[in-house]
Image 1 (cartoon, rainbow, N blue to C red):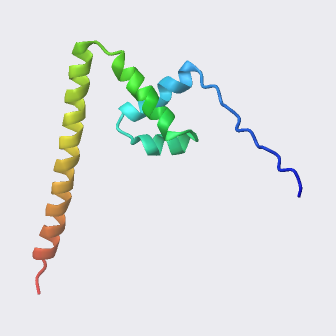
Image 2: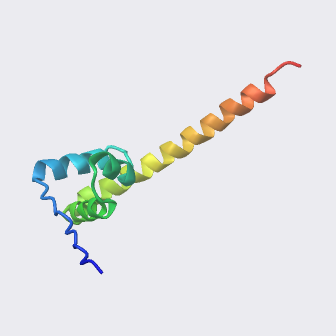
Length: 96
């Protein structure tokens, strides 16, 4: 039997600029898996960075962040309902 060579994964060092840009993309509304895929990095690392960022917030910033997340969720819900109503209008508005 031949000896199998172990392939060691190269650990990439990310500078603060890269980290802050990745977090800005996530905080801007893009999903963590989408950002991780586009930057070629692990989703777990991005989740870790986001958790670290949130834990460093003051109580006032945490409240604002929670409110912003709630408003984004509500906005997505309203947009989905609007799209459903548009489709229903198109279906029922047809003349036969």
